[in-house]
Image (cartoon, rainbow, N blue to C red; front, side, top):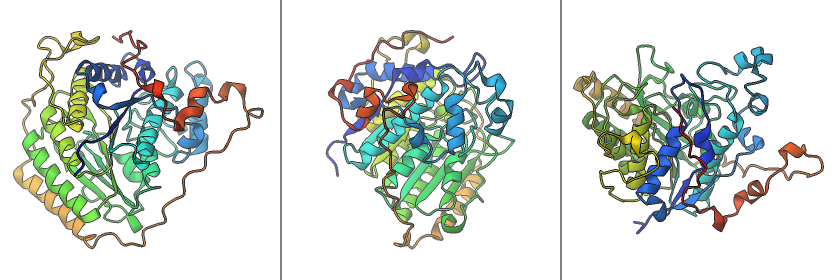
Length: 428
């Protein structure tokens, strides 16, 4: 057993200042709120805090198509009217609007997940956290469900350079379809998603019968749930399935997507989990003592998102947090009781014991099909992706590397900071 986990935490204040638009449920401002709550509990003193590098287009194109990355790079709110065809092709519009600094937003949250994976690969930490990441719906050539770049796929590709098998676990209320699809044909990544399924619920995929195909058959696991699932049923099912998965698959590293829209009272969710129930899943995964990359994801009642990810940061640090929220810049959001824990709701749990039992049996049955630990002849470990040296003279001056980007592989002393005042504004 490790005596003390070394934890790397990635945050850039700029990520919380982008604005999807007045009626859009996604509020990146929740990331500033989370960070300030983490600071107010002084958790930053127990971790290494880094500002992530902004992922280069060439890094984003390790998964996404070059034309799509290029389009995200080029499009702005002022020019979007000129690109009706491309907007439709790349699924940009109401759910995935074009907003100011869209590409930089993608570069920051994807850079955080890539950096997190690299630090784990180089054994510079045991656990790496990027609450800005977890945008699991983005596809190779299209945006989807508020997600533009799939940082999780990029992080997993990075981990695959050092690990023969990577386990991806998703507790967002929505199916982790983009990650599942990216690895649907390979046994080198097992994807496990617990999500609401049915009644035309977005994205409409994630039936227990979706298993993966070809080499990836039985390496995609879906746990479709109904409205109102509570802590007891969720955590019991989660622990049973994840224990069996880890025992059977024996991953070298785990990526955990902690979407907070599975909490009770979420604007877009329909589950009934308390923060304690949600955090129990994080605690359980941590116990396997495997290199662990933790991201955010959905979550549309921002004060609960901030509470949840702060509690989970505490869980990853083995630190129990007092329930009374300390003074911080966003304290008024936590009125009237200023308490950290949120209880589950009062929704009816539509998941009967027999329904949950059936799902569990189906999943365990599918796992038995790969019981005899994955074959040694797994697909080749890919080489480290080649990032070209840029010729300063040939480069567009607007795209020339800034010093920070050049330093991205170097651990800089001055990157440790206690919350720059770069996010003093609020959104409505």
